[in-house]
Amino acid sequence: MIYWQLFLAFFIPNIIGYGGGPAIIPLIENEVVATYGWMTHPQFAETLALGNALPSPIATKIAGYIGYDVAGIGGAAIAIFATVAPSLILMIVALGVLYRYRDSVKVKSMSQWVRPVVMILMAYLTWNFLEESLATSGFIHTLIIAAVAALLLMKTKVHPALVVGFGLTYGALLLG
Image (cartoon, rainbow, N blue to C red; front, side, top):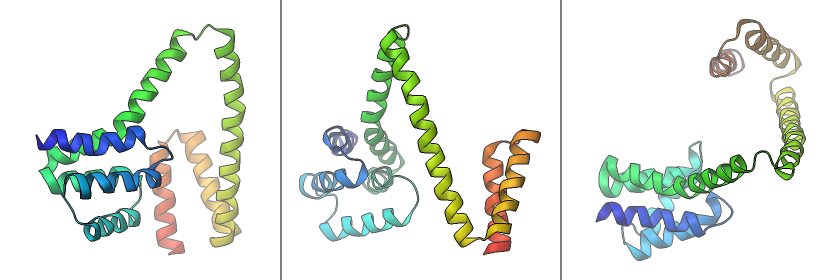
């Protein structure tokens, strides 16, 4: 029964909440504190503060922590699944519709319009990263990291995760 309650406590806020993690936090708090009584308001506030201090989406961190606190590893798995299930279901349905109508002129033109928008968003993100890197690390370090990353990715076909790891190591050793 506790697993079902955990599922409902995280599925319902995520299915009806709109706006991502910060928008559904009050809904999750209501379920966890008022409906099921697994935590007090101050305990939930501490959990939220801890979750905000760590990387990754806040809703999954809170779900994992509360699920584990209430019902161990199984509870954490159920709570995290209930948190991501609404997005997963919506994505599967949307992809199913797109795949079914993939030969449609409207779907093809929509796909053609999405690519340039994604490219512009990625270029904007890259520009922001470049500006931040130049401001915090300087021109020489930014140039070294960019050149080594480009060479590794294009010439040696090293996995991108390893390139990120190399960049982090460089930054920790020489810029930290």
